[in-house]
Length: 199
Ligand SMILES: C[S@@+](CC[C@H](N)C(=O)[O-])C[C@H]1O[C@@H](n2cnc3c(N)ncnc32)[C@H](O)[C@@H]1O
Image (cartoon, rainbow, N blue to C red):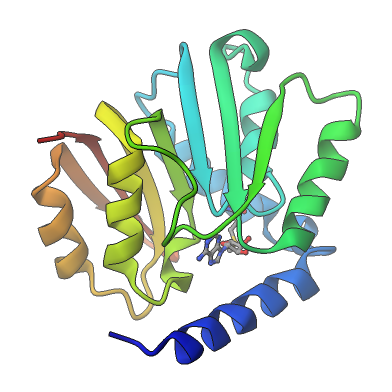
């Protein structure tokens, strides 16, 4: 086990990194993140979902969903965004104040490795380019599984660099059905999708 101080020092570094890039994050990453969402969205049923966006950042996923013609954010989705960087969340919050955002969002400052939710709360879970930041990826995955319901669609996009993909697949195979892993040419992330099966 990693000693607590070492673990929290690494988290502080991550928080500082994202706090300091929050103001220009959208301009730099919107295009590439939108490409990932399009891939994650294939065959996604958004109707009447309680959606967790784990490591939501500045809310690019929320922005993308709110621009989809076939999804009614207010009526069909209860969106919960969680992030460890308060400045990323501030950017998100400011975005939702603008009139062109049609949906409601609930934003929570928190850690994917210790999610502040009870079991089986969500039935749609996204995490896009966030999980590679975790000290203990398996702990984060376990948390996502814990807060998901039976059959929850788990839609992950994880930076490929330095990822131990076999370990992720091995673990997710034990708690999902229909697990699919896609690597698309130049894309920096691997897209992993499956439906949760709970004991
Ligand atoms: C590359 S950004 C991706 C943001 C967003 N998902 C997107 O698609 O634009 C990574 C995000 O993960 C967040 N993050 C990193 N470690 C985290 C943790 N342990 N718990 C929650 N969020 C975390 C960062 O603060 C940052 O906002």
